[in-house]
Image 1 (tube, rainbow, N blue to C red):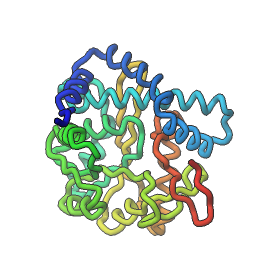
Image 2: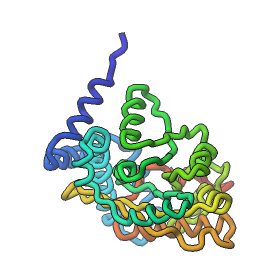
Image 3: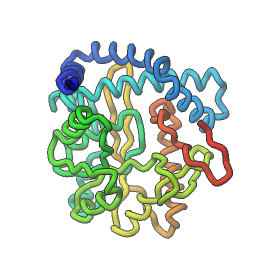
Length: 296
């Protein structure tokens, strides 16, 4: 008989969603210490990414960044319990939203909105907080390999207002169907999905396979590209989500490649003040130009 993990997973994440802040932070510190020791392959990826993107730092400085990164990553994992099972009141008091007036103004103008949300540690908290603000939104969703986990994640991400979870199998076309109806789209621009639909665009000076979709969608559908930057304070357990004004004159007369390079520079500028907040555990440079050896 197969073991039903769902009740246990619900109990664990529900506990994280209800426990006191000090307890959340204690679990985050424990998991943050354990993670790089247990997930050595992920720790290797983080170190490679930091070495490629910050060659000017010493080994000791990059190692300190890696430790802080895993501390933040672990806390964000624990805090999915808060996002998926915590009360709306507690989420509102823990996750501060700034700049929502930019979204409100665009909605009032009837503009199509592409929320440009790079992979920061606090991404899940930002998405949850925005679904409390927006009556309707859409985002891509990757089905989890475990059916029990998949159900918990889907229900957690869609618990507030109306959230359209578009299968990654449907890709950007699925998002565009909602965008055309005036539904704001939460778009994650900065993962390596291979060569198809991508160009090698510099990211911290390293050619990175980057989807051109944001620039193409903005040009084709007159969508405003609105940056959403999120950060976590590991000492207080509080999150900050900043919605910026629409990217000025985007894409303008730029080619999709030049416009995408402009967005990558925007991400870099937001990463530099606290690099550990970025999601370095993914293989951002997995796809290499022809003839170049892999990094990992």
